[in-house]
Amino acid sequence: MISDIDQPQAGRSNPSDALRAVLESRLSRQQVAVQREPYTPLAVRRDRLHRAIDMIVSNEKAMVAAAQEDFGQRPEISCLLSDMMFPVSAFRHALRHVGRWMKPEKRPPDFPFGLLGARTYVFYQPLGVVGIMSPWNVPFGLAFAPLAGVLAAGNRAMIKPSELTPNCSALMAEIVRQSFAADEVDVVVGGVDVARQFAALPFDHLIFTGSAPVAREVMRSAAANLTPVTLELGGKAAVIIARGADLDAAAAKVVSIKLGNGGQICMGVDHVRVHREDREAFVAAVRRKLAEFFPDYDNNPDLGYVFLPGQRQRLAGLVRDAVARGAQVEVMGDGDIGQLATMANFPLVMIHQPAPDSDMMREEIFGPLLPVVEYKSVDELAAQLRAGGRPLALYLFGGNSEEQDFLLKNTWSGGVSFDDVMLHTFMQELPFGGVGESGMGRYGGHAGFRTFSNARSVAHRPRFDLMAMYPPFTPKMVARVRKLIGIR
Ligand code: NAD
Image (cartoon, rainbow, N blue to C red):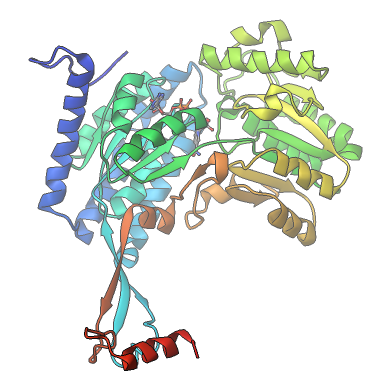
């Protein structure tokens, strides 16, 4: 496993202690810088945001090549959109608004304090050092996008990227080193042992993007330091097809997202729910779009590979389980069920009406398997969705405003897009994050600035000290408090 941590350290025989010592010294370097400059001026924040944009823009070729190397095959446009445009848009948005975000926010003082000259406001100050832990599926994008809010809020950052994309992680460390001092932004490269120790560092905030089982471990480690966490997890994001929806438009989104990045997108499409009378027409639309978008499936450069053998084996296991429970399975690209675990160009596999207790209807799929589940009524649909947990996103195609409103009020998810997939995640001013098992906390735009700031409440006393209530306490004072409470 590649690592930029030299271990063991001289004088330390236990590699785990040596690793902890190195990580602590790298954190301590940033903490010293925080002590030197606890409040980062606007010009410094802007300069860091500019440098982050330049870093990405000037390393485009190397970033595409590293992702290509790690993924085996990943369309250049996937890398441009998810690893570059996503964070660059976040940095640009932060640059435009950081001056306004930093301004103290006036709040009205309670009556009668305001009349007598009290002033109250929220003052946003940097937290200090923020840890960022990121997954492999969007290796640069999910490490850099949170950095926009972290830097805009005036913090310093340590990033731990995934060990499963070693070329991307090594390049990230290099380009960050070229663009930032180690006490501004530092990238720690290493395996799961490094990740565990990283999560145990006493950061002022920790943002973790990844899976729910690992998030539980990370949150336990953070709890030991009372480090607040933002958890960006996944879940079963459904595409719902309402009666009368444009089936071709819905199928186009579903096919392109299930096969772009190998379906390995946290807020992509997990499964489809369609009215029983539209099921056949929708399945036909999926077949048409697949043939149109990926005519030569075997050698198609626009497919994102399922490059991790463990992922392919997991997906093949989900298919076997669904078959064993009676679902009808259709391998829609080249290949058959027996070959799935070995195919990096994993085909789109449609699963008709899988049993609700099958593994693929209980776990996040995170790959090109497409369960198609029927519903008979909108009420039944909402009940099915509520039973399926609280995912990162829900998508409704078609439907009138009443149906949209019904869905919003009767289901849960971190975000919603109507007639589209992932649209809400591109909107800089919509807070991004999950609910329940899809995570906690929000980043993106102003929400990111707030998440990574200390919202300090400030009150200036009015001319008269209305709160003066010193001993000895008299019956008159007690009567006054009773009156304020409303006790007769
Ligand atoms: P993962 O949980 O395996 O790994 C995420 C990070 O945790 C990596 O940096 C890894 O080094 C580290 N890690 C691994 N084991 C650890 C441990 N025991 N202790 C501490 N840290 C550890 O996730 P993944 O497989 O890289 O990514 C896929 C998951 O991420 C999916 O569940 C997906 O839905 C989710 N995801 C969520 C978002 C989002 O924005 N909400 C985005 C992308 C992916």
